Length: 312
Image 1 (tube, rainbow, N blue to C red):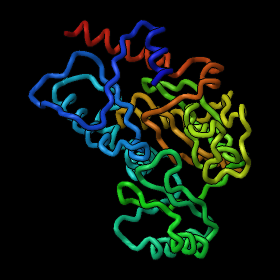
Image 2: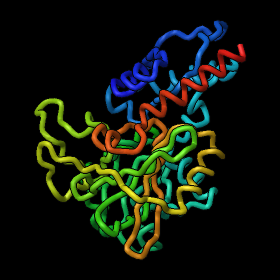
Image 3: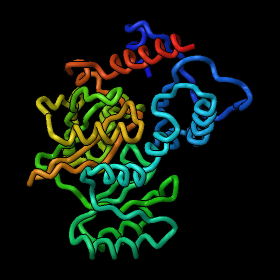
Image 4: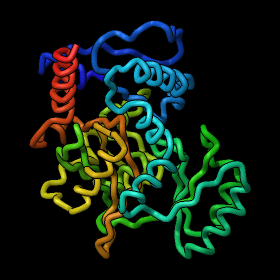
């Protein structure tokens, strides 16, 4: 939150933070006036906040039933919490996504055997309620997966939903993250997957072990990151037609702030695999970008706040 607090202060927009991790909500009370921006993280349970999902659902339902203006509201929260919801919504918008099978309360090994036979290539596992690379592992084939599963090395997903997904090979060991605020494209960021692996949170706090102060070697990384080295850079000149499809997808689903991640393959296929509706920003990249993400969010919510005040 500190980068956002600084951006809101610089833009002269008041900001009050509410930490939703359990509490009492009187449904008969009206909400305080203002614009309510949800930053619920799908991986909050990994940081000891297991009550946050239920609390945020309750608060957003209460706010919207009361007529309060929300940014990334109740319906968007469900997209944040489910990669199944994200992938199906992206595909419905005509956006290329990886071949994916969801496994819920069924034999994961048997599902993987069928998936590999149908796919005929390497695949990855993921948690549907993910973030931070949760449950992500790459397998060359079924036998390797079966051995890992039998060893107990795969952590069960929080919501009980596993994904088996086509492995998409990047043409240059990178992924692209396109940042949008108010449905408008700001800039694209490039993440080095050789050093970043499957954990590509751009916030500075995600890159360092809080106990040792050294860079974290994420799952799937093949090159160790050195202190002071970053895996993120500004992806200048990214002007792919997929950006317009992203903008349409965001409008269709009421998503106002998001970072959308894709991989470009050697044959030019742009495959979109993740939508981050609680997007964070890398400080160095954001400073080099033509427009700052946190400052644009402050300006956007500030305009919404002015409209809400004039309508009151």
